[in-house]
Length: 100
Image (cartoon, rainbow, N blue to C red):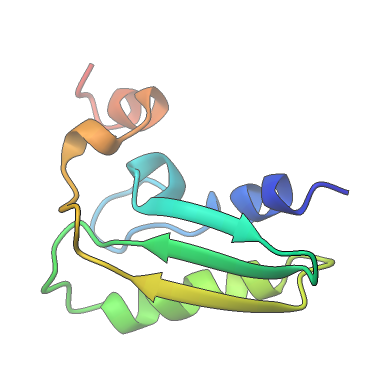
């Protein structure tokens, strides 16, 4: 069982409310760790600090991570440093948005 891989799959099912791309490929996830007790830690940001749906997005991420079989707990940390920009997107996200 590879929990990090499974968590990434789950995060790819969570979409930014303003951009039709998942948060992982958008580059909003800065860090993902799973400890020996299978507790997950996700450090992430938003495309804009004043996103009106920030609370809902954080809850969606929390729910998605906690729903992964084997995860015993989840902690989501929202940060704004470094500030997100489009260079953090995966190639797939850039293609989907017509930026390549």
